[in-house]
Length: 174
Image 1 (cartoon, one colour):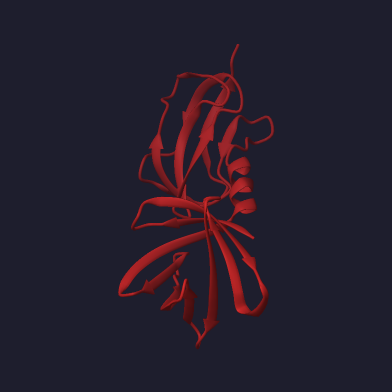
Image 2: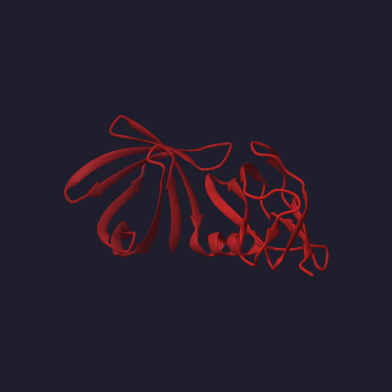
């Protein structure tokens, strides 16, 4: 299965593919380049023993209430957010959703408005970014679905929005 993993401390997003092999082994491919075979054994509710290239690691994994996982390995703590690749693609598509005939650009996920890229009255072109929203620690661009004019901006930078919130209202270009 393929995932998109975001490690907050590194500020990076990685594509990670995990393929189960026989005997508790897993093939892990990172960004289509680095390939590892790891042996993973669970010890208790959230402690794992990981053997990679002959070196053993004890990894503590705690699911976080706000989403994602706290991971402690070799004395270092990381916050990791995982999303399967199909869900990420679906959210990207849904993130550009427009209410049927209303001109409303909405979000399918709750999140925080990082940046509003347009102003009311602006002329916009199809696929022009309008708003950047952080959802599940990933930034998503919401784009104009067609050429038009920004009628109303319903959000402000720094604001937290719920799922299905209207971000921007557009009017079709004349």
